[in-house]
Amino acid sequence: MNSVLPKQHVLFVQNSIQSVFAKTVSPAVIIPCRKRVYYGSGKHKGGMIGRYGRRKYPPNWRVVNFNPAQIPKAWKPLDWDEKNRIDYEYESKLAQYIPGYKPKVAPHMREDHHDEPMHAIDNDTCSSYGFPQALALTKSVVVEGGLPAKLQELQKSLPNPEDKVIKIMQNALLFDVDSWMVDTKNAVKRYKFDNFRHPTPERYCPRILKEFVRLCDAHICRVSDKYHDRFNMHNLPCKTWFQRAEKTSENVDILDVLYDWKVSINVKPFMQLLSKNPLSLFATPDEVEETKNRELVSIYPKLLIHGIKPTHNYTPEHTTGFLETWHKPHLHTVVLNTAGDHSSKKTMGRMLFHLFCALHSRAVQQYGETPQVLAKPLAAQAIASDGRQFYAMTFQLNTTDLKDDTGVKNMVWTSAPLTDNLQIEDQYAPTLLFDECSPLLSYYPDYYHGYSPDAFATFQALWLNDVL
Image (cartoon, rainbow, N blue to C red):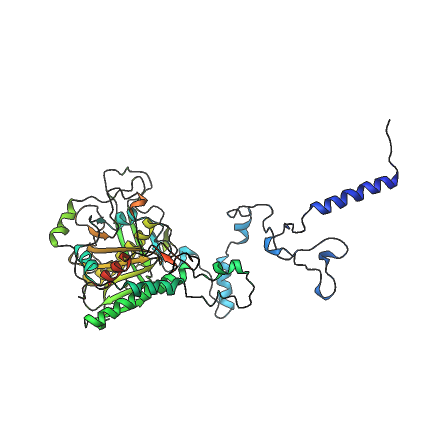
């Protein structure tokens, strides 16, 4: 027998359900909308009337879900290409009637268009290819035993002012406050304030590097008169290109796959030390001749240009960033800020690309663009750091003939003791300046621990090379 509830009972049940639902739902509901401003529903849409209109900012706009449908970032509508297609004929007509208008030109119609592609490596992507690929691409071999013997002797003989190095480290990590991060309005809670004001690696890394350079230059002024023979350059662009070919027995001929490429390197180091006289060589002529018997690093089955994007719009040029008449044209040391790198193998690949680009462009200016074995090789050094980890590398350019894997090869020395298997990530061990340095380390009297003097000793040995 079906029983029918009275009308007043039905209303009581509905009101009870609504009250329970209102208590269970949290007021901070994530509103599914794509804009920070949303429009409500009802008589007054958005809940706001008067001179403010109907637009309303939700109280929890910081947690608004701007992608309620969970659409992937790579997704695009089917008609997106058609709507965003550039009409180059219309662009040319606009240039005829609008004074000063620069029309958009199709890539294949530009002046710098070439039929043969160029594989470009720039300052942002040169750390994406590891150290083994950089060795194979620049036709270089690693010399075992760490840094050259001359630099190892300088590390032990030069005085190491540990107290000054520790003060530099503390000033950069403990007492430096970024003006953009200061809480002037006292809006940050106290338990979040320590993390809010700590300097980031992008801030303290350049400061530590510059202070180390100042400390080394002060030592040069005391013991030598060669300070004025050197010059520091910041963010000096450098560009070069070369023809690289891979001809080994492991390659299998595949249709439409080329084994001869054009590669360009365009970098901008954080700091370059230029000198009036060239840096002394790290290898003797007999050691250079012995590189003919050594084999390059193999990254088979990958090609040497794996991951490097080709482009048909380029201008091949060799430039060191300064005029040939500059009275201090010789590269001594390159200093890199690697605060954004998270892999030691990629960091060392970046260092090798910077050294090769600078020396190759210099060699082309001296000996011409014809690939050849250099009568007098060129040498340079590199230091990379993120403020805590330090890497050191020396490079000697012996040849610009990269069209074959045989013959004389370029030579690389690293501070990390590398083995034959360069794919192992653990062997690219950097030299640590400290383990941890933070105001939160109150259980240490100086707010740091794990300090190592080897980092500055290596930096000082490379910076003072050929000075003492």
